[in-house]
Length: 190
Image (cartoon, rainbow, N blue to C red; front, side, top):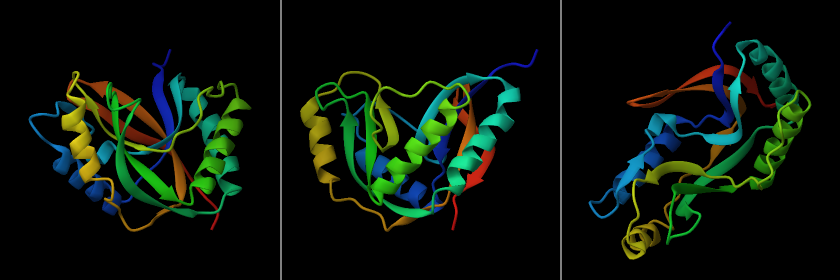
């Protein structure tokens, strides 16, 4: 029996965005901030985490992504500002925010969520919060050290980038970090 695949649906990022995110990581890097950084090439905009799927489900998921994507025109986002989830006192995720056509992004996420629910994937109960995860703190840190670094980067912004497709990714967890492979790509309409 084929081994299950750990999978998620996300928007891939163009090279200039990845370069910008790497610069943000470098600017935040400090002995005071003990963070496990996400490799820049692995940063993506998650729309839906699927968990373990069977390889036989890939074509079904792909068809649903095609149906969702064809109904959506391409749109533009900007990477802007830096923050943490859930809060500065107990940060678990460091992220770069998004602005621009965020209403279109929310519509895309909802369309993907609904399309995948039609083939048996549970809808997410938590509200969608668009962000790009750049790191995860390894241990508790002084909120003042972190806060000062975040405040310095609040105005960091990148020129707009185009969202033109959604992808189904496989995630393989390795000692060196996660490795992602695109299993299916669905273009948005132009």
